[in-house]
Length: 373
Ligand SMILES: NC(=O)C1=CN([C@@H]2O[C@H](COP(=O)(O)OP(=O)(O)OC[C@H]3O[C@@H](n4cnc5c(N)ncnc54)[C@H](OP(=O)(O)O)[C@@H]3O)[C@@H](O)[C@H]2O)C=CC1
Ligand SMILES: O=C1OC[C@@H](O)[C@H](O)[C@H]1O
Image 1: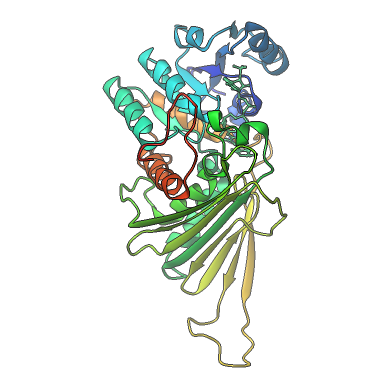
Image 2 (image 1 turned 30 degrees about the vertical axis):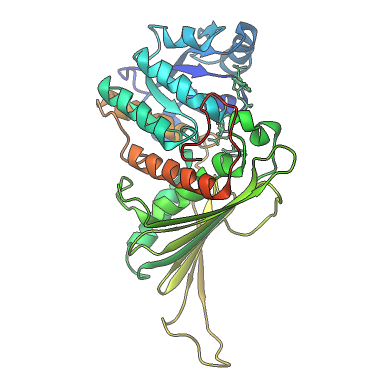
């Protein structure tokens, strides 16, 4: 850590599971992951109860440079704190819009958990406010910053295996109460769907900020009997000239499958390991020729496994996105190129369409029913 680096001062909103994971990674020494140009400090923690904020500080921050973070018994107190530069939002989905909006209106930069918002209309409003107020805004798509994301893109865009023909990507996780609560925007699509979409977009858009919307979206949802949200969703997305992708997000089964993504190129397949949200390796399977084998012919496939671990000294892998936020804010950039708002917009647009076709139930959350139902 360079002593001249000015720390970015974070306010953490909510004290739940992911806010804890993120904050533990955030306070790790950046120089241990070759990120000596940034420094992070947590200056405030906001919760619906001040006791919970204090407990979070005691458990997570007490032996760090951030030990003096202020416990706040409301999110509003964090937004109003002059010692906070950027707010991390770790509340349930249906609160992301209100929380992000309040933070932006209070003049804070924002990093918000996935899914960014409940629908595209909400996201567009947030982008408008951020641009008007010249504030940084990004969805916390941590996988985009993992070593494997860069390594797979390098293989795909090298051109040596030809163009992408198809992508097949799947995520499966055991459900929790939050994940099936309609009023919290529960369901497989919104909770898990961002990961297949990230895997897909990383391979489709080398510049990470294409504005092209898919030429077709077809969605199917299987309801979860107890609450009516989607227990699993499958959607097919197609871009002109970019091949077709089949994505699945499911809470019905949890299998130890061998791969989370299959990228089929003209002369090779790339299989990315599980789990879809944090893979650390992939296999390249090269075919000897583009032609189909003749009957009885044994095709020799060359298999190369590539390890891409989150390096030792790093945490769970949530800190890389925080480094990106710090660099963007330091350099006066209002948006990340690697995790662009255009890509988040495509995700929300696809989800809106899948929910419409899959007949996702009207939510009682603050965000209201998905537009178009
Ligand atoms: N990037 C990633 O890898 C992950 C991202 N996520 C995303 O993070 C968000 C939160 O998920 P997660 O941390 O698992 O959820 P939790 O239920 O563990 O935590 C959510 C927190 O939000 C606050 N909250 C405010 N209002 C409510 C409410 N009505 N009901 C419940 N909690 C409320 C609470 O904090 P308090 O009491 O302090 O106010 C609560 O602890 C989700 O949008 C999810 O998609 C989740 C897991 C992984
Ligand atoms: O974002 C997520 O990634 C990891 C999963 O365990 C979690 O349920 C989900 O919200």
